[in-house]
Image 1 (spheres, rainbow, N blue to C red):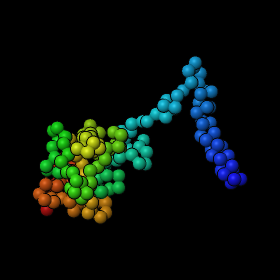
Image 2 (spheres, one colour):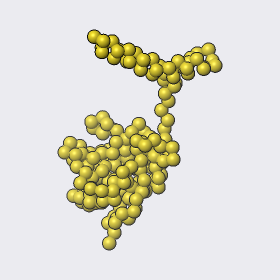
Image 3 (cartoon, rainbow, N blue to C red):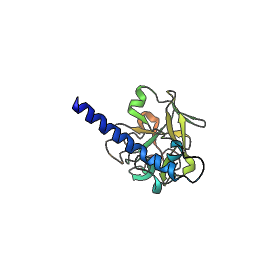
Image 4 (cartoon, rainbow, N blue to C red):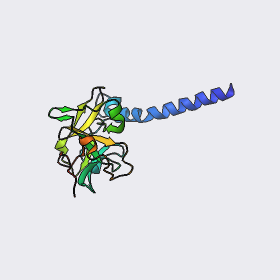
Length: 175
């Protein structure tokens, strides 16, 4: 019983400390209306990698054996699928396909870019209701068998999968 009382006391203290910043914010408000919790917690939209938080979606460009390709925040090559559509954007890789070709999730529309035009970045709603990132309308995928950053083993798979360049076009194999 004593342990339960002490645990409840700690939980109350933690809850009170959690409310302290909100109370201070309300007390410091110069206007007649106190700030609401929604106003205190704004969600910014990031458009460059300089102001992006660590877990923000990132697109950048890397030099590979194929030339310049778009990569994700971990440096893995991103691909486009020939059965998809760019105009209008439509993703067709579902089910088993999406286990090997992982759709790149669109995270709240906030994407940091480096070497890729911000205006080319968008999103499409997949058949399961999730959002997938697009580049020049093409839904983006990561090839699960790529083992390390810069791998391009998905290039040309089935004659329909291609690394995507910073211009949103498929990257042709170099000789």
